[in-house]
Image 1 (tube, helix red, strand yellow):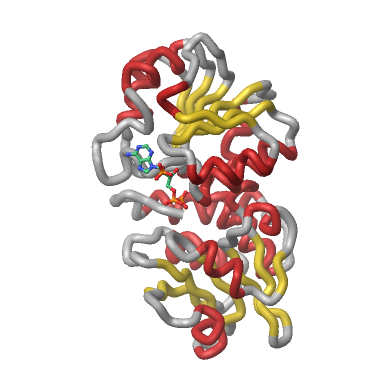
Image 2: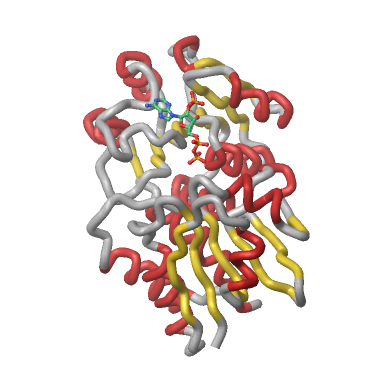
Length: 270
Ligand code: ATR
């Protein structure tokens, strides 16, 4: 039996334990997956003291988890934040599977030429790196300038949300801010957002489990929209693949999805 957990603060409402436990069960692995509230302890000591074989890391620890890992693999090196730990011998190997989750979630929209990504936190960083790898023209909009520096360095377009030119058109508009998660805020000025969405083909919100004002606006405008459930699902599927060294089958993915939905009674987080 191997032990896994999700580190976060808060972590009590995380959907990952039900989803990942269902995955282990489907694979007939006698593993456990718990929640661990991480305040100011050392994540690395905690990981080894708990005897873990792997973990997920959620808000607000993804950057700290990146710094604490022994080896960082793949896009996580560019993103500088990780959501998955794997124990290898006496070392922690870290990955970021959020970008993969996003790419899988938007797959049904088909080929995209341009994306407006609203928000500039860790989630937006993972998405921007994935979009850049896919050669999709990306503009990152944030209400303030500081966090846009990362995206300037990455080589994608950036803009302060209030300065958006509403005559520009985007195939897809993404909300990667926390606006609408626990409040009724829009991620940018309601009026500008309406004008931008009117000309877009698709809308995606990284938040799931609640109809955000952002998604409600897309619905009202008759634009195809999607919430963050599949992003959460597929970042977890990729973590499961990494932990078990297997390729996820449809059966595994379906079992994880139905576990996620089964208790989908609260607002969710990655
Ligand atoms: P995460 O790691 O989940 O992406 P984060 O790093 O705290 O979270 O980033 C949150 C993002 O949401 C930031 O881009 C933040 O904007 P600021 O950089 O200006 O703080 C954005 N955000 C949060 N609440 C918002 C709101 N009500 N309206 C617009 N943007 C918001």
